[in-house]
Image 1 (cartoon, rainbow, N blue to C red):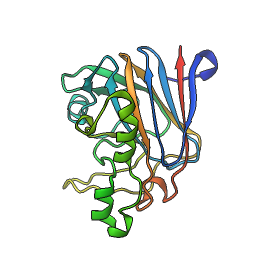
Image 2 (cartoon, rainbow, N blue to C red):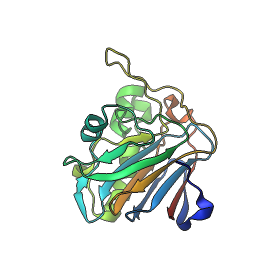
Image 3 (tube, rainbow, N blue to C red):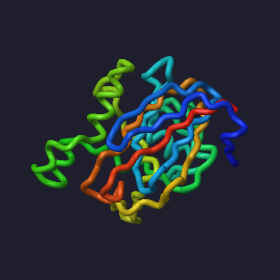
Length: 208
């Protein structure tokens, strides 16, 4: 499926700054296109039903339903009760992570040393941006990492390696219900998920 912005009404067109958060409600039937402007930028993402935040993305339900750890065109983001929240309808990268999680100040310290404790991280982005919508720490669940490359070996070993994306690559999701999308444009500088250089991404909501 090819998404052409020219044939759609642009509802929202914003830049999610490097290191920063972003959020918006995407109405049912509208399309969210995430553009990796400079390439190799991980976009940590959570989705919630806009009318009831208890209905939220479940990595386990999504993976079980599609029988695949990775997300690409046709993948449906589901909640615990299998409610379809969003569907990936176009994808120029072909592989997005469901298991790598979100960096935090605590995990940075554990993995990379105490000198990283001051560094901003995705959990802090999620908490700051989520508070605008009444979300707190208990509302954070395992997230999606769009554009992030986390290969998993047969023995279950996983690693974070150089991304598969490139400047201008994008993916597009269709909202199946009114959906709150919460993003941390990952600030991680200690592993290759952002090529050690976090950059901005473009967030475009269109109405077919």
